[in-house]
Length: 206
Image 1: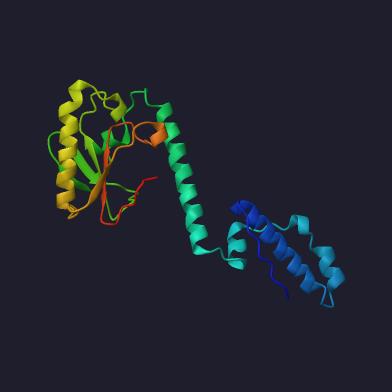
Image 2: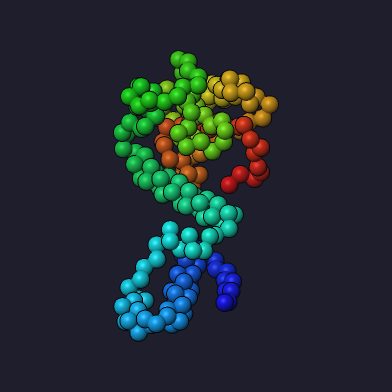
């Protein structure tokens, strides 16, 4: 009986070495049995593939480590989506928000008036996560493209965000976020405000 404690920067490398340790341990137990020769001739280490699922069952990872890896994966997905969206920003094609405004795609509407629409994010990052968008883009694909003619709608979007916070019962503390451009992970090029609340926010943001 022996214990191996290993620390690796990469989860992938960690899994590789844990799988190898499992194979060696398996062979060690085989050497004790009467069918050693037959077993070793049948089992070829190079052909044994341990899936991540099996490895995790054999060697459960600490909760904080799994959470960290989950955040890394989510961040990578967001960055990939942002880059893909930026590549098509000048295509002029309708965005998913245009389809939500036209009621072609269902959404859970929190607030609506003649200028803006507010609906729940399908991938919430807080107990309350609502998107507030202008019904007419008018070239306002991102905040970085704002011009003087957009002053009124920009102010109205902020006021609508306050109304949303009031309706959701988070007026005592909430955050309004605008992602502008690919390095800010903007994934839809139709200006939108994220209204987040219902939990303690941290600073600085990611």
